[in-house]
Image (tube, rainbow over all chains, first blue to last red; front, side):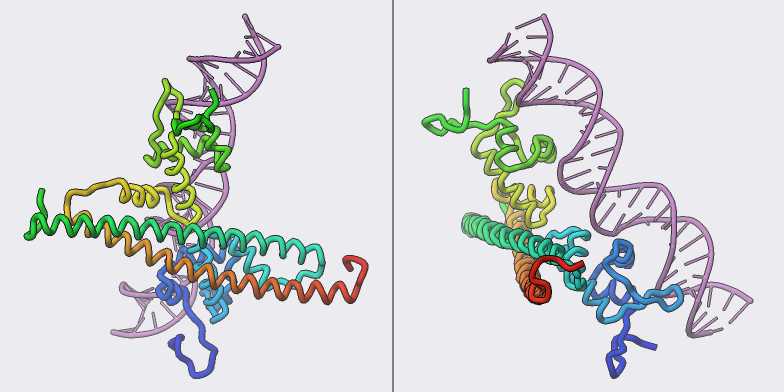
Length: 142
Length: 142
DNA sequence: ATGATACTTGACGTTTACGTAAACGTCAAC
DNA sequence: GTTGACGTTTACGTAAACGTCAAGTATCAT
């Protein structure tokens, strides 16, 4: 009655398994479902997660880490799964994609700048540490 | 009585000038001050911002764009400005710096992955658009 | 059949980051 | 002298993303 190893790929996960694997609470996972980001099957009342659901959760968490709101994450995931019939929809989608890309590029620059500054700070730190350790070789001063 | 051009660098800014330049509300700027991220001088009651204050605001907004909370931004800015006397403090600071860097590196990976997926989605979009425009050369179908 | 354990659905509480409205001061322009 | 633009504080409101009970259901071992 286990789940993570089952010969073929009829693997399924319980909510707590996923929670542990990705280090989030079950509350959070249920919340994502509430917001339309996950649609696990049910065995009676109990939620049953497929590998596909697992990937979806992964995408949600990745999106979160780079600052997307849950609504934005859902928007992106919807893009993936939708086959919109209209040309207008596709144009709109391309616009949205361009937006997102611009955001992400700016974020990359922000991160690079921040990393550089963190490096500067670290250098200063290490210099002070070296100085202090010279002046008082045993331990801390004050 | 202007502010942005003044021969030497005795430049100062009003709150609305900064608000316009960085496209945030004055409310937000005051809020950052409330949380200890800005300390503008005062002319009577009115806030007066130096170029240094402007840089601080810039850092706050950059930090926000990459997902830092205001408290985290302040922590980083405090690192820059503090000359902590104790070795323990410096060690702690180096730990924090390592943490931040790890976070940012992971974020960079997340962004790259997301960009790749956005590209995939875009390719699909364009293929569909091309197909639809062939099938019905005039405009949209339904 | 009886806990123990895991899962479920509400429902209210909390934190963060502001928005919004009230109520007032100040100074230049008309 | 009042109107309007800009500034101030104080205070309450709000959206997002969960946390935290409470109370019930299902299953499994003893």
